[in-house]
Amino acid sequence: MLKDKNKIIKSIEKINKLEKGLALFEDGDEEYLSVLVKIQGLYDEISDTALECFKEMTAKIRKTGQKRIVKGIDQLPHAIKESIADQVNGLKGELFE
Image (cartoon, rainbow, N blue to C red; front, side, top):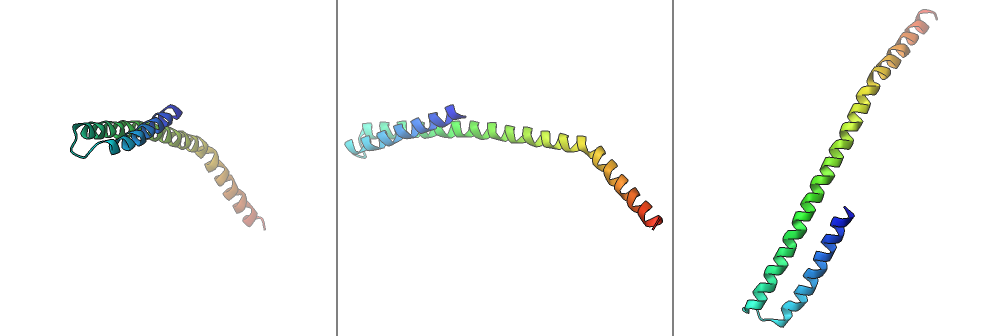
Protein backbone atom coordinates (compact mmCIF):
# COMPACT_ATOMS: atom_id res chain seq x y z
CA MET A 1 0.00 0.00 0.00
CA LEU A 2 2.79 2.44 0.85
CA LYS A 3 4.38 1.70 -2.51
CA ASP A 4 1.09 2.56 -4.24
CA LYS A 5 0.73 5.74 -2.18
CA ASN A 6 4.21 6.86 -3.20
CA LYS A 7 3.45 6.06 -6.83
CA ILE A 8 0.34 8.26 -6.70
CA ILE A 9 2.27 11.09 -5.03
CA LYS A 10 4.99 10.94 -7.70
CA SER A 11 2.34 11.02 -10.45
CA ILE A 12 0.74 14.10 -8.87
CA GLU A 13 4.13 15.80 -8.67
CA LYS A 14 4.70 15.05 -12.38
CA ILE A 15 1.26 16.43 -13.20
CA ASN A 16 2.05 19.65 -11.32
CA LYS A 17 5.31 20.07 -13.27
CA LEU A 18 3.60 19.37 -16.58
CA GLU A 19 0.82 21.84 -15.80
CA LYS A 20 3.43 24.52 -15.15
CA GLY A 21 5.00 23.63 -18.50
CA LEU A 22 1.69 24.23 -20.27
CA ALA A 23 2.28 27.97 -19.82
CA LEU A 24 5.14 27.71 -22.31
CA PHE A 25 2.81 26.74 -25.15
CA GLU A 26 -0.32 28.16 -26.72
CA ASP A 27 -3.59 26.23 -26.62
CA GLY A 28 -3.43 25.25 -30.27
CA ASP A 29 0.19 24.08 -30.31
CA GLU A 30 0.97 20.44 -30.91
CA GLU A 31 3.27 20.50 -27.88
CA TYR A 32 0.43 21.81 -25.71
CA LEU A 33 -1.75 18.90 -26.77
CA SER A 34 1.13 16.48 -26.20
CA VAL A 35 1.55 17.72 -22.62
CA LEU A 36 -2.21 17.40 -22.01
CA VAL A 37 -2.07 13.79 -23.23
CA LYS A 38 0.82 13.07 -20.83
CA ILE A 39 -1.17 14.61 -17.96
CA GLN A 40 -4.19 12.52 -18.86
CA GLY A 41 -1.99 9.40 -18.90
CA LEU A 42 -0.78 10.19 -15.41
CA TYR A 43 -4.36 10.64 -14.20
CA ASP A 44 -5.14 7.26 -15.75
CA GLU A 45 -2.24 5.70 -13.83
CA ILE A 46 -3.49 7.27 -10.59
CA SER A 47 -6.97 5.95 -11.27
CA ASP A 48 -5.70 2.43 -11.98
CA THR A 49 -3.53 2.42 -8.86
CA ALA A 50 -6.37 3.72 -6.70
CA LEU A 51 -8.71 1.05 -8.07
CA GLU A 52 -6.21 -1.69 -7.22
CA CYS A 53 -5.85 -0.28 -3.69
CA PHE A 54 -9.64 -0.21 -3.39
CA LYS A 55 -9.87 -3.86 -4.45
CA GLU A 56 -7.13 -4.83 -2.00
CA MET A 57 -8.81 -3.01 0.89
CA THR A 58 -12.18 -4.54 0.04
CA ALA A 59 -10.61 -8.00 0.14
CA LYS A 60 -9.02 -7.25 3.55
CA ILE A 61 -12.34 -5.99 4.92
CA ARG A 62 -14.16 -9.10 3.69
CA LYS A 63 -11.50 -11.38 5.15
CA THR A 64 -11.67 -9.59 8.50
CA GLY A 65 -15.47 -9.71 8.46
CA GLN A 66 -15.43 -13.42 7.68
CA LYS A 67 -13.04 -14.06 10.57
CA ARG A 68 -15.36 -12.19 12.94
CA ILE A 69 -18.37 -14.16 11.70
CA VAL A 70 -16.56 -17.49 12.15
CA LYS A 71 -15.41 -16.43 15.63
CA GLY A 72 -18.98 -15.47 16.52
CA ILE A 73 -20.33 -18.78 15.24
CA ASP A 74 -17.67 -20.66 17.20
CA GLN A 75 -18.70 -18.85 20.39
CA LEU A 76 -22.41 -19.36 19.81
CA PRO A 77 -22.73 -22.82 21.50
CA HIS A 78 -20.97 -21.51 24.62
CA ALA A 79 -23.20 -18.41 24.71
CA ILE A 80 -26.33 -20.54 24.31
CA LYS A 81 -25.17 -22.91 27.06
CA GLU A 82 -24.54 -19.96 29.40
CA SER A 83 -27.90 -18.43 28.60
CA ILE A 84 -29.74 -21.67 29.25
CA ALA A 85 -27.83 -22.20 32.51
CA ASP A 86 -28.75 -18.68 33.64
CA GLN A 87 -32.42 -19.29 32.79
CA VAL A 88 -32.45 -22.64 34.61
CA ASN A 89 -30.81 -21.05 37.67
CA GLY A 90 -33.38 -18.26 37.51
CA LEU A 91 -36.24 -20.78 37.40
CA LYS A 92 -34.73 -22.75 40.28
CA GLY A 93 -34.49 -19.57 42.28
CA GLU A 94 -38.14 -18.75 41.63
CA LEU A 95 -39.28 -22.27 42.51
CA PHE A 96 -37.44 -22.43 45.81
CA GLU A 97 -38.27 -18.93 47.11
